[in-house]
Image (tube, chains in turn brown, yellow):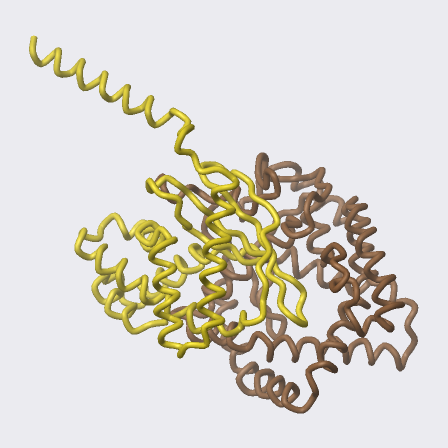
Length: 256
Length: 201
């Protein structure tokens, strides 16, 4: 009910976070404190742990565990695609889940990608809120979680409940799923180590760099940049994303 | 009397200029096929540099050459400086552009090893505003493919790249943030920024 009011309140107005040109970051001061703490945690725990983990665990096993974790997240994405009215995305995720769970031995092998099936939607409840017309809201950097926005953070909380597996899986198996997620995170931290380090540690202002990259990437994902035409009856930005081009919102640099 | 004519002349030539600007650049316009061919050519050259197995220094040199030939470096550099480009002297702007080109080549050139064995596949082209966006997918072994878009314009007089967008992240806009932070660190001193940029990347 509160959500319905929130959606109604937003209506069809253009999202101010997108139209103002600069990041909407009223909580910058506390965000920067969290950023420094997150860096400390990364240096002390996450980075060394991910390096140790990658050194010990063979690559194929890391990939298999990551694949498993991705596969088990698909039903949650299907629920969100359904809530967004994205039938195409829901169907393609369903077939991907079907193929990887059977031919891919319970999701350990990503057969679907090898077969050139459509990319997964990666739909989450933050994206569903976007589809419903909720504005992006202020940028946030949260302890441990990192870069997000108020809309994405609210989506994460709801997504704890959107995955049907959350209701089906019993006690011991729940920990396998959680463990696979942690493993996937460590693998990703190690695999993109150079990229993450260059943004967070080597930039002139690591906080501003991470904020810029997160917001650009998040807006791209939320608008379905990769999954082609997505039903979006509540599109808040008139004329944007025409023809699926991501640069449609850019100002023409030759005009300056 | 003469001044009147002059004014009329001025107005007429102004109108003509405006008309020329409004005309579609039909005969010279960048086409989908042209944009695609340009991306194919650059991808081939980048792949050749990666496959050459040279030292990191030569690879960065090779990448800088490609950037210089196919990228609109003047425009990209100017655009990363943002509004501060307006208060820079022509000499500063030239020095900045030079330093920026080396910085980009070092920063991204040393990451090229990560793309060894990757494949870039062009999946589509669409005209956007005054430019063309070439959509491509990069396939890496053991990873989900990711989305790369090359933005190409002919507004400099030649068909040149002015941006590359990876999973929605524009290199030009990200570097604008970075250059802005570097300039802030130097209290807006452009000469100090240029000196920093020569060492960075």
